[in-house]
Image 1: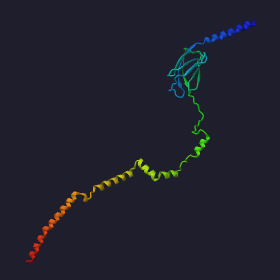
Image 2 (image 1 turned 135 degrees about the horizontal axis):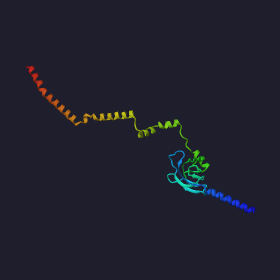
Image 3 (image 1 turned 180 degrees about the horizontal axis):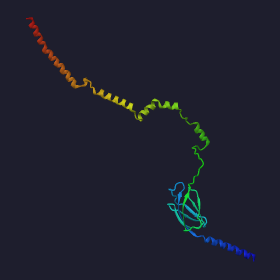
Image 4 (image 1 turned 90 degrees about the vertical axis):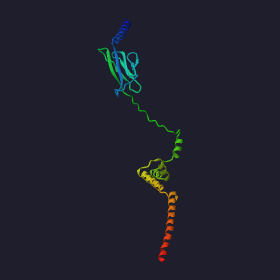
Amino acid sequence: MKKVTGLFLFLFAALTAFAQKQEKPLVQFTGMVHNADSLKVIVPYVSIVNTTNHNEAGQTNYLGYFSFVVHEQDTIRFSCVGYNTIYVVIPAHVATGSYMMQVLLKPQIVNLPVFRVFPWATAEDFTKDFLTMKVADDDLAIARKNLSASSIQTLEKTLPRDGPETSGIQDFHNGVLNSHSTVNPLFNPFAWGSLIKSISEGDKSRSTETPTSSGNNATTGN
């Protein structure tokens, strides 16, 4: 008799709990998922799981929007890659039968350990390369290289000239042009023609002046 009474009480409690669970009213749960650091950033395709109702799963659309039916006091889990998982509990006694919420997911920051990559397979290879490594020059050696004749000639071919250098080159160019503008008279045919004409006219003038001077002498003798 005691066993029958105990079994009856157990069944009654189970049926009562089941009835209480079924009595929870349905709620239309609607909302959008945003980034907690910036409300302007939406989080699309967030995984939604109702952990209370047999892990019923869903997902937000590409705009972060979701809408599905739940029971009051259900626990909803929101998870997404790169964000911390959060849980939302549907409140009880929702008067309108509809519950709207803006879900904010916090970005997940993971500090990865430092990882160094070395180009040497073994320590012996590193030692060999280190011993044969060329040590960089100091400031004095670098200055000597920069002031060497070969370096200056290379810089003259590649670097543009400044103002004083440009004006000096222009003066030299003008001087060369002016020197070319002065023609040697020995290579000028017109100068040769003028010279021959002058010589011939001089000979004619001397030939005409000689008889005059002899006639004057004769007159003076008489």
